[in-house]
Length: 400
Image (cartoon, rainbow, N blue to C red; front, side, top):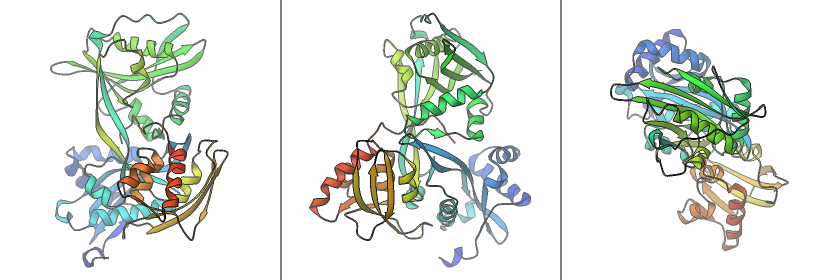
């Protein structure tokens, strides 16, 4: 450890230290300091971490315990938000030291993954994070939507918040969408009670069964009215039509509706013409905290039976073991993992994360030099790895 980092302390802050963190992070993020206590309260004081130097708060972050769906299972994941360092301490390695302490703590607490939206990719790449999922933003032109007739038997009702049946439908939906989050109370609060917005929730039932919903906010701005959908799920064609009809009903006051998630969102299947635009302003960055735990927590294609050995290597001073060598045996959609002495394949931590989430293939990562083979015979293992982790592009609608 560098000499100027030896006196740092990584702690869960007390009330006075929370005030110091609030003053620091509000200045860094450009919001009123008076708003910080409410943010900390929603996040849970037990999930705050700060770095102290000479008893002064010089850095901090917020932990967000949750899950992330891969292979149809919720993988234990801890999100990171509110990362900040005081201006006078930047450039000294404080942020990297804090992230290493956080990674060690989170692994010991049982989390397999950690994810965040990085304001800078350089810092987080240096401590093991890699781009692993995308959050697309797309707008549908409400004026161009043709009149939609909701089929008979499809009933749309308006409710408050997110009732249990809505949350259950989201979870069922998210299981089949790699990268989607297994939301806790804090994330659901961001969906139904976003800051400075008032939302309405619309449920779609068919024959008494919930098949879709959308949570929208409508706000008048200086030059136009803004309609935003914070979370929308449609599991049937009728639900797609019903939700698009809800959006269309705002056409007299709003020009577009903004949605988030996959650039191939199911709702787009209901558009007759190309009346939307898509961009990808956010990539979620993920780090694998525990390779073995991540491998055993998910499911795999039942047809994919394999017996592979590989090693995952990490950079020094990132808070985690520098090498994890495992033997992975899969059968019937499940995996058994144990330590391996010899490995036919070696890969960087970031390569494993991108392979695991499905954002890149093993063959692609090998071509980039992030996966190396012990011998030419191991080329067959690349195909086996691709069969295990192949799936849709990982996406998510949430921002945290």
